[in-house]
Image (cartoon, rainbow, N blue to C red; front, side, top):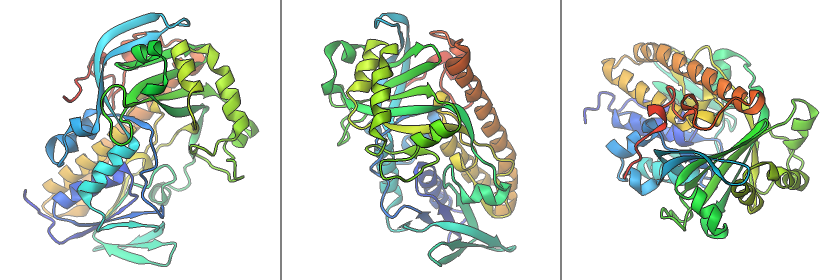
Length: 405
């Protein structure tokens, strides 16, 4: 592979899935890449599900030591369940999934831990015509010719480029959880194990699908059934109190497994009867559900000189299109391609890369906003509606997406 940036240094701020993907692609261009992650430990404790869209699978198809089949599970149906588990709509629709920890571990293995630095929080940067200097809370400073911020929804990079742009609360939260397939009834296993499955009620809905079970169990029976249940919670003291964890710490974005206050878990489980019985069973068998605040975040700028902001750091979209990791991966691939075309001119490459990424980010936030309104407030998301399919750039393939085999 041609490496036009051999020996040129790049820093990636944020070591999650988007940051690792960007780091790998920059390495392939010849950059000497160091990734800085604010957490003091690796991020492999997160087990939530990810729908694997083509943008995220591309690394495993083209460049990884692993194949898509090594990191994913697959289903063959799209299914909507009614109040008594009756099938309201069903059609062939191949999708593939992974768990957050499976994907993170695979990408980190490909990148290697040698230049993956933990426990460093970036706080600001300055730049001149040749380099960017990053300052960290520890007092550390680093210089490089390129800096990519992939530091998530609370991004220092986004704030630096756009000012204080607060996340806009959508008016509902996502309850998330996983249950081993072996722990559900035969009827529930039969309905959920080979399908992307939805259940709807007034002003609420749940999405369910199987993901790899630990340790990397990909076959039916050894996997986890993953779900996101969207519930409306009014903005203000009510939702703010939900995001105070058992230790008394306040969180803006999520409360992890095991730390959600027990009274909220109990109320959620008691309320699950509004859903199809298979979904109700899944919720009530979850050992440690957790919550996510559903928000919209937009950027006006993703580039400043030699600095770029990608993924959720630039645009955070509601999960309804299952496009968060796909957006981060697409940003990284487009950035690498722009740099490869630029004959070594980093600033020109970033300037050329930015407009299309801004358009994609805004279009995605717009679309998932409409999807959320229809599901949570208007109650107009009908079973099988082709406009409501997953996809980064719009409903993909009328709902049918070929899973890796």
